[in-house]
Image (cartoon, rainbow, N blue to C red; front, side, top):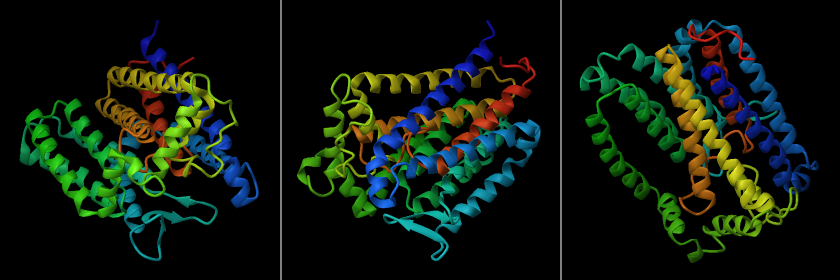
Length: 371
């Protein structure tokens, strides 16, 4: 058995399954809201399909490029995404929704450049770590420049503000440094400092502290800040073992906010029950295991680190989303990867997928066919 070919096959099959689940439950969870607000029950499904088509086109374009060209363009792509994401902070250019300025209006839909910024950052970190692999033991020449590269996009995300994405990006970046055999003592020091910085950021903004307090006890404000978490728990509990049936959710009737985005997991649990939730979790576990196996088999260090970063951030986002919707973590505004509604997120994930598949096809240790 060719293990790399087996890994990429299961890896891609898992993503396809997650995307299909997403399409089904985006329609199921948003149909009532979409019909009421946009006059079409399939409004959000149709927009997600547009994102899926654009994502597939992105993969196709990336597969036409030589992998060395993708690697060479990485620094420029990183700088471009920093600039594009920074534009969202400028009044009159960036679009604000629910107090966060994360979007640029492209007419037919809103574009969230931060979804590409996080992948561009991971690409450039992989590029840097390969280039500086013999200097990673040095604080001044290895680790400090690494922190600066990671800190700039994290700061932009915090200014939007997007605290959840900033935390997941930093955590994934530090994991990449560890996987590249970076100094563990630097990571321990950064981790301790990071905990202090997170506490300071939480206390600096009243809404973050309120989210933390509501997370500890959502029933202290059941009609206000705790409403969303309570409704999510009601949806999850209503599903029991086998669920109410696909399309039969009761919470989607304007009880659970953001039911097709950040809290789509609650609707999945309500309609498919514990069995459906287990299947979803198993898919993410397969994604993690096969993705990490694939990363270890690449002969190109840049490809291996890129794959590790992509798999890690997707898994971390999925884990955070599951924790938030089940009341085990404060709300973060992070969707379920490949499943939640969001064109920018889907296109960004497909961009990274295209890079990985390109690396697989051009890696000298593999046969060119994956069939």
